[in-house]
Length: 240
Image 1 (cartoon, rainbow, N blue to C red):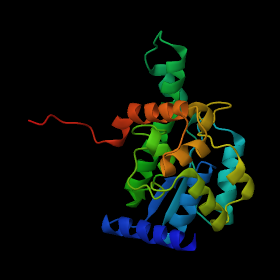
Image 2: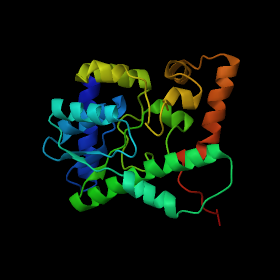
Image 3: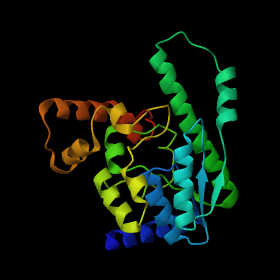
Image 4: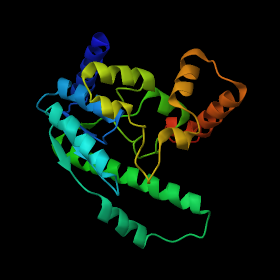
């Protein structure tokens, strides 16, 4: 884990400097992935790392967990509540009489995209890169919002499945209670990653690494992957 951590820190530093930037900013959600990325970024840029805590009708525990990580590792933060901005947009946007479930997803994606806009606003002012916090497991099945948490400059954990991120978190000294809490994007009350995907990270990681899975599970993972293929590509253009 020490070798992996050092290589990731070096990679982050190289990517930022090669882009002609002076530091990094990221969203610190109170989850394991963003906590790991924040610590790696702090190591890469001790004086030029800024973590943004961007609650949008979020749970108090997520905010507390984000602050606990920032305090433990001396990571500078800015708290920017997005509740009022979100509420204002929902109020003025057109209303649709569609499946209520689609409305929930549309509003959840709006929250994530507001965070992306905020990150880039700050990054542009500071001359920083925006660092993503996604991992290989999420990328494989498209468990991210297009032009939301998928709208970033670099993704340090992009080749690590969730279980590997968890190992790295233990090595880095992320609080144990944070590592063990159910992964969630905090998009609505009771929302969890695994509940939304319909599979566990353990099952997904095993399939990604070994290709082993029961027929139903394999079908589910492949459906998620195929249905989200557009998220992992740049927008298509005509070949003529």
